[in-house]
Each structure stands twice: as C-alpha cells, then as structure tokens.
Length: 166
Image (cartoon, one colour):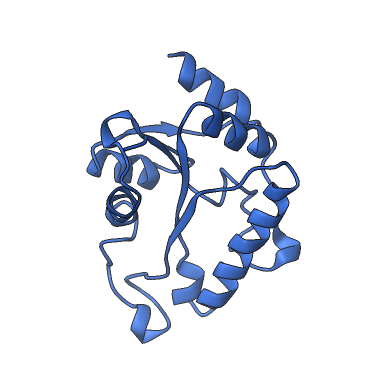
C-alpha cells in the first residue's frame, strides 16, 4: 500500500476559469509540475478528485472532462511526470440534465471519489492527505478520514513543501 496526495482540480491543479473544459482553458497553477514530481519522489501516488457539475448543468460533456484530463497529462509529460489517476463526479442535485440530477455519494463533500481511489489503487489512508481550495474539499477529506489542507497560495510546490515539513 502506498500513500496518496489527493488534489482538487480547478483551483489547485489548474486555474479555475469558471467551468474550464476546453483545452485552451487550461492554465496550470504555478508549481504544479514540481509538486507532482516531488510527491512521486517521496513515494506518494497523485490522484485528482474533482466535482464537474458543468456536465450536469449541460455546459460540457463527460468526454470533454476526459479530454481535459488527457491534456493536463500531456502538459505534465513535458516535465517527465504525470498524475496517477483522475476521478470526477458529473452529478449535481439541481442538474439541468436529468440523468445527472442527484446528490451522488461521489460528489464532494461526500467522500466517494476518495474511497474509490483508496480501494482501486490500494492507498494507505493513514498516510494520505488532500489539497483543495474549498471547504467542500476539506469536508470530503474529513469524511474519508484523511487530512485536508486548504490551498490559497500561488505556488503549489511551495505549499506542498510546507505541508511535508510539518
């Protein structure tokens, strides 16, 4: 079993440009490449867990989300690194598209995506943590019995260094 660092996507991995999904919307947060490399050197899996209610609202499709994730991987590949897994939740209780209209157990603040990753990837829960930019991210971490850290800085690598030095 390996520990993992769970990352929210919009606002932590990439700049949140209000429902980003088009490839031209991708702007990586400063220090993402370094943070992912550092995490891997320290023996952590890197896992993105992201609510994507834009699917439920009809702004874009699940295929668009998957393409955006592939594009993030392409960008990270230039730095000889990659995210180990992406989990996303397209559901929302007030969805415009009926099949996505529910308070799904994967939707943060519920811990579903984290729990799936822990099971799928044989993650060591006790030594894992989440970095998010919203209270719902931290609540999901708490609900999954892992530590959660609120990212409100500009550089993800320097933020990760602060956490690891604790």
